[in-house]
Amino acid sequence: MPDPADTERRLAALEARVEDVAAVAAAARQDAVAARHLAAAHDRDLADLGVKVDANRRAINALGVQTAARFDRVDERMDRLETEMRTGFAEMRGRLDGAAAGQQQIVGMLTTLLRDQG
Image (cartoon, rainbow, N blue to C red; front, side, top):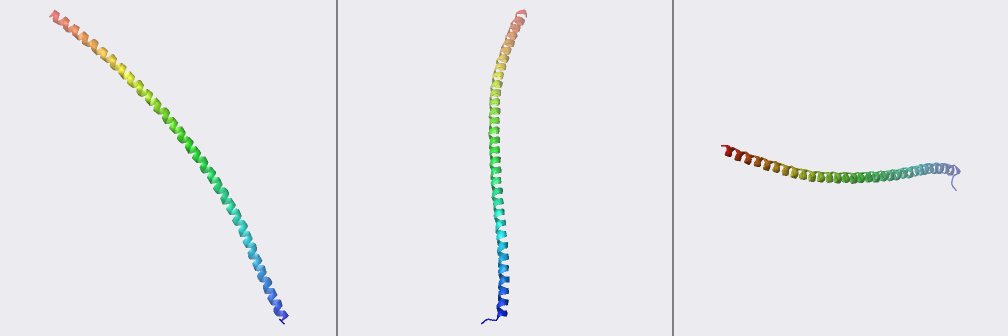
């Protein structure tokens, strides 16, 4: 039969080990709870980041559309200005040609007048 003092000592050692295991298990539970909280916070952060990235993407796309529309309007204005410029130059060319023809007629008349006098 085992010695009661030895049994008492073994029981005390076993109780101490059980307390150590319980403390380790409690710490592991706390670590697991903390890890779950961190993982949930990480998931929320990633979701928030995804929302922000999507919002930025939409804003950038909207700016691209606005910029393209502005360039289209500038292009249309340039086309109109080019047409007006060409029309204006053609009109001025016609007027200058008319003025040159009139001057040539005056030169011819002056030449005839001077020849008849001289």
